[in-house]
Image (cartoon, rainbow, N blue to C red):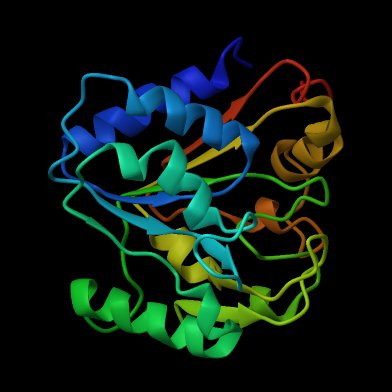
Length: 223
């Protein structure tokens, strides 16, 4: 439990960038606050490559675009080595194939091993665009898939990294704030049996490097 999880995240993100890591960003209001704080820090972004964990199938300048939010809050204010966005405007299937190709160009064939992967948590305990009970949770071969019908609003198709990619990451960080996430936090991180009904509970990086940053409200049901 932290008084300032966004601040803690900003410090970790800057450290990862300074080490020239492959960094995976997520959407959401709390990550946006962390990104904005990162943008004004004295940091070396020149070696960092930015990726995305999921995206809505909208244009990059659309108000619902995760890339668009991150670009305004951080990416457009720094000079990283590269930004690899999910092209949501292609639609869920073509967009997923395009992002798989981008990953192959950098990491080669097979499941990529990204360095630093940030996830949020939905009130239904989803992460990335992996929703409770969705078929995408069962994918084991592909790195990226399309989600035609998401489990919660906004009800637009998505593109998402799959569980094998989350498991392969060298470090996974969850950022969770607010009382509306408390029940989901307990389901995801409370030590209960992992279940597809709480997708975040299934995230178990092989490296063992899993960090959960919660504020007091989000952690209220955790011991």
